Amino acid sequence: MKIDLTDTTASKINKALVQGRRDIGTPAVGMVLTLVIVTDEENAYDALKAANDASHEHPSRTLVVIKRVSRSPRDRTASRLDAEVRVGADAGTGETVVLRLYGEVVGHAQSVVLPLLLPDAPVVVWWPVNAPLDPAHDPLGALAQRRVTDTYAAEQPVRELSARADTYAPGDTDLSWTRITPWRSMLAAALDQVVCEVKAVEVEGEEFNPSCELLAMWLADRLDVPVKRSLSSGPGLTAVRMDTNCGPIVLDRADGSLATLSIEGQPDRAVALKRRDTAELIAEELRRLDPDDTYASALRFGVERLNSASTSAVRGAEAAVAKAEQAVALAQAAVAKAEESPTEPADESPAKGEAPAKGDSVRTPVESAAKAPAKDATAEAPVKKAAAK
Image (cartoon, rainbow, N blue to C red; front, side, top):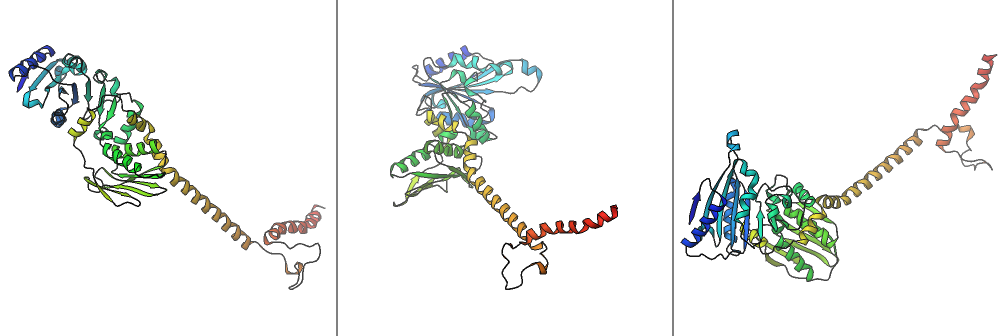
């Protein structure tokens, strides 16, 4: 059932919700939370479809906030609120209200959303795209216990991770982190099967994929070992290789659906690691409303620290090679200089087969070259004195 309201108010929307529940014969409210989706017109359909699918596991009142861009200065000064109320089969197992904001009311979306929140129920705010830099201090984010963003939808995902670390507050989470839950579970289970010490880790995946970076930061933070980030053609995460003192442990997923777990001394096993859709990710995030301390620890590890740790060995090797090349060049220059230096006259050197006289020392070519100019200066001294007289 759909009810369209044009140029309406929050009180009229609440009345339409009550009337809609009565018309379909379900006057009682059986929803457990309020899900607020802040998006644009382009991504509203996909986000709402994912929320409706997730509502089968978490019945909720879904409020979709769409901020419409006004084209003229006159439209920007005029405020208007249009709403579309959906109940019954059109709203999954809960209720859906699509709010379209125009004009000055765009900057005051929290005043429209606040009267529509379910009483005594938790609030979750989700930004599928264009998330604010500081979700916890956003006017809508301040109303929620949990704030869900997706760095994968950002223009520069890796840089977005650094911004999320700087502004993190308890309750923040990221769908890029949710995507690696099966990977984290499988890697933890693999390490529980062996008694080994992990020495190094390599995470392979697509470039500019924040899930790969988050998994690498989680491993580096938890295992306290060097983690190398390597690139592949995808899709998404493709492999994790752990070097242990008992042999390598490899979790390889080349096709995006089925992975192979290889442990030294054990037969290879096929593991289901399919790429999940947005509805499954949102459903997982709605299962917990407390702060995710593991995500906070991995996020604060830092992308910059991960990259510097992964390249420190390479930089050290390059510096060692450069130092060795410089030493070789100096040695070659010294040999060339020694070969080009003049030697002492033949009559001053011992004859062939004769040993040097006692107290005499054998001069090297370098010493002979250094003393030759001194002799020339001594020979020219009387000439200069005669000219002076």
